Image (tube, rainbow, N blue to C red; front, side):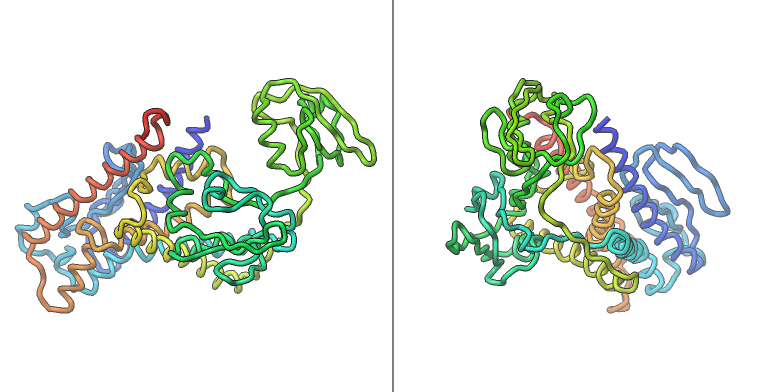
Length: 445
């Protein structure tokens, strides 16, 4: 079921984005009087199709892309027979270069607009959650990645690159995480210590086989009490009550929620003795941990997260800023990949995207990731690679600047080279997915 939820979210997200991308091409082509022969979401074999006017609308069985077939255009169909005939008025090749350029930019523009709209509405509906640094007074808990970079449980991060932070989320500032000489200043037992942020931190924490990928390298330590007990659970059998503090498990001290989670995970389906603080009373209770490594209660966290809400007008610049932040981040990531600063292991395909969506459905997370993917899709399509929109844009820009149109034979060969490059990249990404994300750890070196 978890796999179905991941795949379902992937298909839904891609269907929305690909459908809108191809719609951008189709509408702009029709606007300029070009004949659109086919609008397809997914690749053949076809599942459904309907002819409306001159256009066949199709849904394909392979839901990992889509295409628009425009008459008189050298594209992935490689229809050279038609190209040998004289241009017809409704064909792509008969139109002025500026019109053809707009058609090729149509999908990219729609994806950028879609991404911006998603972020605008998310910030307007959900607001922006943040934790004041004064509320993170119990310090941080770090995972293995955090420990390797020199952070310690209980550290209090007070500065990023020498700048005092006001909100805890500032420690995840993407410029700092991707910088070459970035560092944190932490308060460690009353002393200020500088901790260098590794240049490859982004690569490390997003590693395919990073078992802690759902946990950030540093998070605030959170004290807690019991908020609500579920019926017929280990917590109910232990007679836990709202307001109780679990302070021990088998005499192991528990102060923060992450300590409780670790202790429970290590004792799944085992009998334990809980130490409970109820007001001024210290009580003990015996129970058996659930097989999922839980007790069966909802916690009340004792730090205060705040939400910053925006009017719709103020959501527009804020959402736009978030969308372009995604774009800048991925431009920097591509630069690191090309320069060799980031390993090619970080490249992934549909399996990586599905895992990012996750095995549970959450509207906020779904639309956030879909917004991110929309911006990435626009960025990747703008790359000047033949067979991508950016390749067509490159040749059309050359034509507009020089006044000379590349020959059909050259465009056909360039399209073929681009297709080979893209297929090779897809095979590589699929290979990374299978090797790093599906195979057991024992088979991956």
